[in-house]
Length: 229
Image (cartoon, rainbow, N blue to C red; front, top):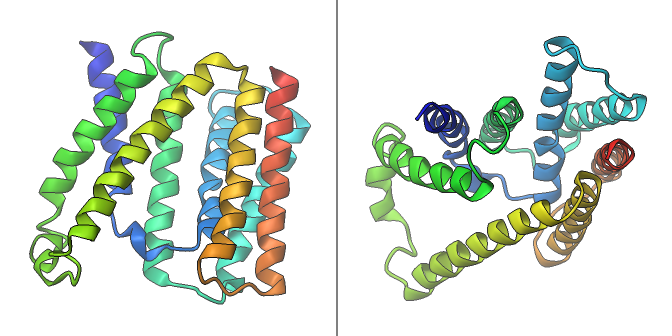
C-alpha cells in the first residue's frame, strides 16, 4: 500500500502541472528544447542532494541544455507567454516526477502500473481543475465541439498515444539504458524535423542556433548514458 501511495503522490505532482493549456505551445522543436530542462533538474538533484558522481559529458550536456532553453525565449519569433508558462510548469513537474521515480524501490510497481495510475489520477485531477481554470464553461464555445471528425481525431489520438506509451515501455524493458536513450533521441529528431515540414513555424538563425545547441546537449546526454551502461 505504501508503494501505491508513493506513486500516487508522484502522479499528482506530474499530472497537476501537465494538465494546463499546453495546446497553446505548438512548436514541437521548441517544446522539446524546453522539456530537456527536466534532465538538468535531475542532474542538479543527483549532484547537490544525492552527492552522486556525474560524468563530465553529462555535466556539459546539462550546461548546453540549460543554455539552449534559457536563450530560446529571447530568440523565439513566435513567443507566447501562456505557452511558455505552461511549458515551465510542465518541465518542473516532469523533473520532480523523474526524481521520485528514481528514488522508488526497484520493482515496487511495474511501468504499466505507474502509467495506469498516472492516467487515472490525471482524469480525476483535471476534472476537478476544469472549473477553477474556466475550461468547464468555455468548452461549450469550442467551435469544433459538434464535429464528428474532432471527436474521431481525439479517439484516434488517445489510441495512438496508448500504443506509443506501450511500445516505449516495451522498448525500455528490452534494451539497455544507452540504447533506449538513443532510440528516444532518434525519434525526437524525426518528430521535430517532420513538424517543421508539416506545421507553420518561423525559424530564424538565432532560433535554429538554440535548437541545435539543445540537440547537441541531448546528444551528449545520450552519449553519457551509453558510456555509463
